[in-house]
Image (cartoon, rainbow, N blue to C red; front, side, top):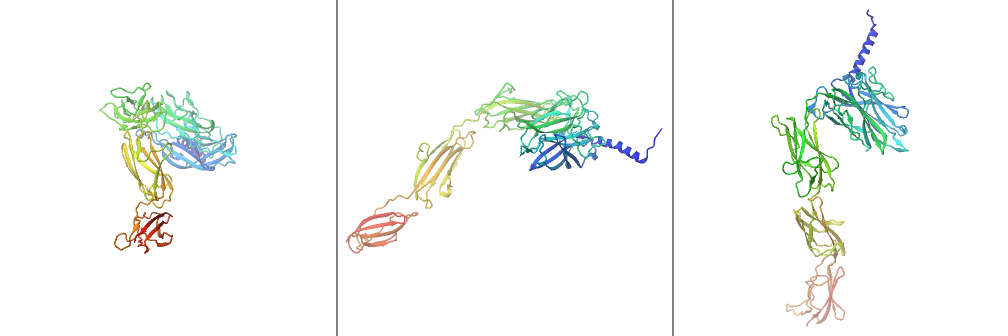
Length: 631
């Protein structure tokens, strides 16, 4: 017997039947919330939602979602925050060549700027944010009724004020999203670790994903409900520590966030990861990522191997037994040989420091490529060289040498841990010599230079190790060129030479001092040993001496010889010492002649006898003498 429904009732029934199918077609892959401090009280709230682009319904691509903020102490609703969609991109594969048509994931970003005011968000218990959405992928194999299972995206954050002081915190960012699949019976690894902008300590663990309150009837609630949020229900035999079965089952490193699993069952598996942040040993927040991983049947891919030649001949480094010693008088390079039983697979070699930071060895030949024979194993041989200045300080450093193939879904790897010690080349330092006088102990060389004089000195540097040398000179608190000093150097390998020249001019008052630092440096050794010479130049006035001889007798009889008195060899004018005047006096002190011309000529006073002269300069310098006028 059939029962007829009125038209409106039939429509309601059709909608009721259609809505669950639409919800079950959303195929949400996973996601996480993120809260980042911007400035002042402003924060940026973000939801990263991952969507199955192969099986998902385009109608489930929400233009916006609603986030709720609640007080952890009492689940009191603090705010509802609309999150509009701001971007839509695809998640990349680790190895794009391994892309499969059955797996394509979108990353949808929902975001809004919010104000967390100190007067409002000051609960000692802290707060949590939640966004609820349904539904999950129908094909998930490790939870009960996956098509009706929802998701509650969840994070916790502390009060923005503590003890009356601002308390700024950004949640840890879990990244990157997972775009890959795992292969049955093969080890799968992925870095799910994050970073914390505040430098807080992060700890990871596996948790059961949250189901929340959304349902296939109400897939996108108008507002998020407060906690508690019901978890998903695992299928028989599975749980938080066995979310993807295998040997080992899916696990995460508590400090690095590295996921590892060697699955033993095909299917699509959902899993949950929690990242908690600690400041000074106290937990202040957490964020969760809910995601899924396909386990597919893949072609077998053998693991490549890596070996290091430990010296001449066919000897190879033995991990765990040998320690490579890199010293100055032997080759600082090693040969690395890798092989892969699978032919026609490109190999890549990389290095990763284990217990040290700083400069690492570099490849001097290709670290990517293959040398193949038809159907033969792939082979890659490369050279790794340690820097000349590598120095472990007597400690043993550990370096991982990693070879990877291009197999799917992820490269198969082999890691060789190399233990090594290194010491830089020995250096005795250069020798600096000069024409300067020897320097007294712990004091500069002192050189006296008169204004107007020219001072010249030479310097030379030599080095037994033939390191490149550079001679330089620098004035203390003055520029050499501006002071009229010149320094010309010829630098080279194992030797250098230079000439210093200075003629103090009138711009420098006397007395004065100038301090010049001459430096010989090496540009090549790991631990350069510089040599220095400090010279103090003391500038003094021109010496007060008369470097000429005057005739002390004249015969003004017009015979062309000694007819007048002159002083053509007077000291030349220099700076403030300039000729001013000459005066001639009789023996009784009476002035008989005066001139302000340097080229004066006095023919006598018309009477024979003894006379005296006085020459004065503008700086007060005086030259005195006598002369006789013969009849």
